[in-house]
Amino acid sequence: MNYNQICFMGLGYIGLPTAAIVASKGIKVLGVDINEKVVSTINKGNIHFEEPGLAKLVNSSVLQKRLRVTNKPEPSDVYLIVVPTPFKDNHEPDISFVKAATKAVAPYLKAGDLFIIESTSPVGTTDRMTSLLYLERPDLKEKIYIAYCPERVLPGNILYELEYNDRVIGGIDEKSSQKAREFYSTFVSGELHITNARTAEMCKLTENSSRDVQIAFANELSLICDKAKINVWELIELANKHPRVNILQPGCGVGGHCIAVDPYFLTADFPMESQIISKARELNNYKSFWCAEKIRNAMLDFQVKHGKKPKVAIMGLAFKPNIDDLRESPAKYIAQKVMQSEQNTLMIIEPNLKEHSVFRLTEYRNAYEKADIVAFLVAHDEFKSLEFRQDKTILDFAGVFKQNII
Image (cartoon, rainbow, N blue to C red; front, side, top):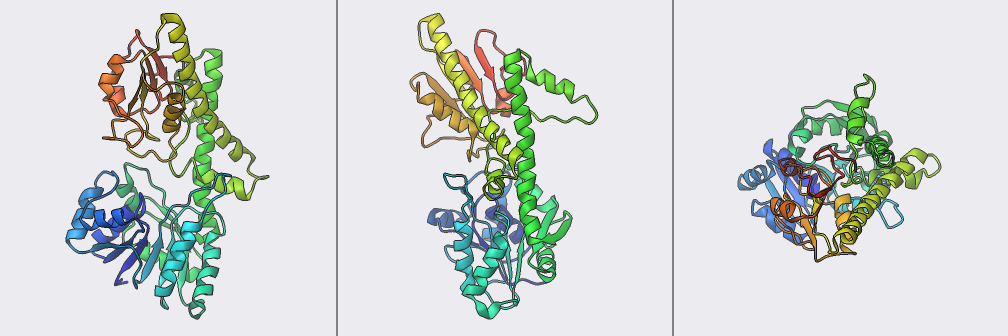
């Protein structure tokens, strides 16, 4: 099918890469974002966050006039809602951005248009947005196609995974599912799996909740091993020799805008049923607090032993290795927690950032050389190039060396 224009509502970590890929297929794309700085940046052919290959793709699409960005929608054939869905202080999901984006496109819809939600959403959100659209535009009832299709990509490899990963597509009816499938086939090489909207919504939440539970098991093992004086890295490596065991690696918690957030969408709506999911969230959050306390105790021990305050290197701020993304980062939380007790002797290191609005960053080799206490929170590749130093107190929460007990 030929599309006159595709409209993307939201140009963040998923919206912009997807818009750029669609534009690269020769389809005219309109990107919409309420942030004027984002609009201006992209229209100049630049990007507002780092992702391998994205800058070149966006620049090319803008120069060839296949990608244009503004702050409000325009008549299009397909509308994709790719806005954030954060959670409130009580861990209830907030779909206000999805609702606002839906209302924004409602006046521009026409019969035969396709409306897709990609934003991670509580079960039933697509049904609620369908009702909202029909309330705003009763003339279009059963004359437009509506579907939910979640992304499942890894930061740092987004462009490849958007194109080659399988996708789950859930329409409000069979015709909507097929219409959405037709659209995604223009740029997705992976298999397109058809289901209904509620199942597609639950699928996204299930995938990330499952990973959160698996990480919680690894983190719980690290707590047990610390008390039992066992090297958790060696233990997991040996246990994984079993043909049916695949334990993940522990860390300083869980971050990112998916795994650290999506389980709350289930615990909020199904509190009695989501016992394991809820406990996993609690444990992964506790691991960050535990790591911060370990660092603070090491600082106190050093001061008692040497009669002076230690120089401490906090190695990593991102929520996972080799990216610059700090969303829901446990490392960031730990750095802030440790800073509450000491700032003057603290060095913050994040090799994937040039600067930060709160933290004064230090070059990683410099910091490692000067530090008395080194706390590895993220296993960035740069850190793995360092040599293990017996003359330092090393708290390896990320498995950089895997030689010591945390």
